[in-house]
Amino acid sequence: MRTMTETAKKKRGMPSSFTILLALLLIVAVITAVVAGVSGGAVTAAKPSDFFTAPVKGFADALPVCLFVMILGGFLGMMTETGALDNGIAVLVKKLKGREIWIIPVLMFIFALGGTSYGMCEETVPFYALLAATMMAAGFDPLVGAATVLLGAGCGCLGSTVNPFAVGAAVDALSSKGIEVNQTIIIALGLILTVVTTAISAVFVMNYAKKVKADKGSTFLSLQEQKDAEEAHGAAAAEATKDVKLTGRQKAVLWIFAFTFVVMIVGFIPLADLNAGVAGFFDNGVYDADGNTITQAWSAVITGLPIGQWYFDEASTWFFIMAIVIGIVGGLSEKKIVDTFISGAADMMSVVLIIALARGISVLMAATGLDMYVLDAAANMLSGVPSFIFAPVAFLVYFGLSFLIPSTSGMATVSMPIMGPLAVKLGFSPEVMVMIFSAAIGVVNLFTPTSGAIMGGLSLAKIEWTTWVKFALKLIVILTLVSMVITTVACMIL
View (tube, rainbow, N blue to C red):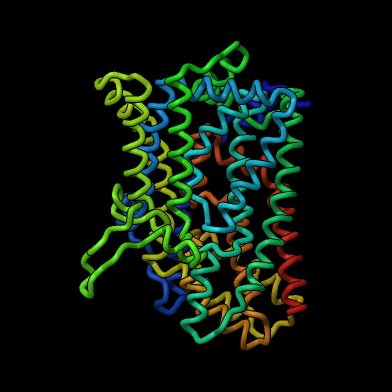
């Protein structure tokens, strides 16, 4: 077993997530300059001004997410100030005494359900800090908490079934080209991918958690990361060793806390679109011919949009209101509520900057045309290959493209009108092509540094991106091979 000192030595001098993103931004700028000369005008060389303004433009592009993260910081700060969060985690761990390990697969499959149904990704950011603290209190480390969130939701997105941001956008793009898609096949393949990859990931994380609990020196975290995690989440772990009881106010705060997250999750799920039978409950309201509201949907009173149509502006509004409610119920004074919220939001600025910089890389590639140039070249490469080669090569193509376009909806919109007709022309199933796209970008979004959700979430858990890659690399290789095998078999059969 490694000692913590040995771990620290191996991690000494490891670049921070911020440094890595800056380096990637510079590399992309250099690549555009090189490719511009041979692309025939398809790619424009990035100017110095493009490089320097990319983070700012990335911030503007990711503004709704950044604002959501800042308000979330205020919300979590309010929870911490009431003492309900730390004490609640301690009580939960005591009740699970001896069975803490099983919280990992249960939560991972819950997150996977969110990923496969509505593309739960950025919405997972609030859970990183919460589960980092919970897993530390249970005797594990923050890496277990981050892995539970990231791998759970990530494997669900990998095997998207009705996810509107992945398969929904892909099917819509194919429909625009006159290609009909069998949704039953997509759902079946998505379920197979989701269940298999989530089960593999759960076993992987549980094995690591057991090692860490038995020997703290087996952690992948450096001493600095352990120190940062202790400062951020150690209070909950310390409370778990005490005889903690929840006060009446704290119990009420925890119920409000749970209710807030449930409403947020339901708010993001397009339930009326997924199931017409509940459309009446999630009513969109009544409008006249000019689009003016006659009768507002009951669930749109607070945010202006009904539950099921929320995005980050609506989620930010909801968390802002509930943060104030929690402060009042928790017995905090007006001044304390204001100070606590501001302090919590300020703590998130490092996360916001990381998200903005990650988005800036995508903005730079789109502005120079590098993303579309690579996509066209990849499509040409796939022409005329047999099915047992087409599927794995298509997977690898999407794997590479996903670093350029980490957005699933963005990738579906720009790539499916090219890759879908190519698959049909070669006699392959368009449904399998949709799942190749979903699985490949899903695997990449388990570790790509251009994902604001990953970089922001890991920052909340006090884990460097390099540590995450070192921890998850073996699993990512396994998930890649498993996904390639499943989609290749499907391509040969269908």
